[in-house]
Length: 52
Image (cartoon, rainbow, N blue to C red; front, side):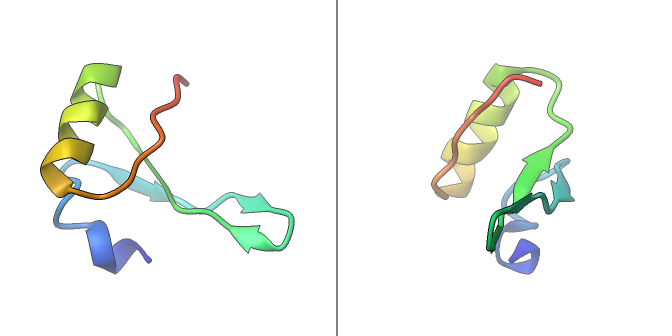
């Protein structure tokens, strides 16, 4: 999963939390919500921005 978006979400670190029978990809390490929003927009990937 990460290989699909790693070059698009520069500076992010991958996390793989389990959610029942699903493994989610979370990318973290952004300095702010605005930085995360910009990265998602630039990457053109669907994102759900959450606060730490």
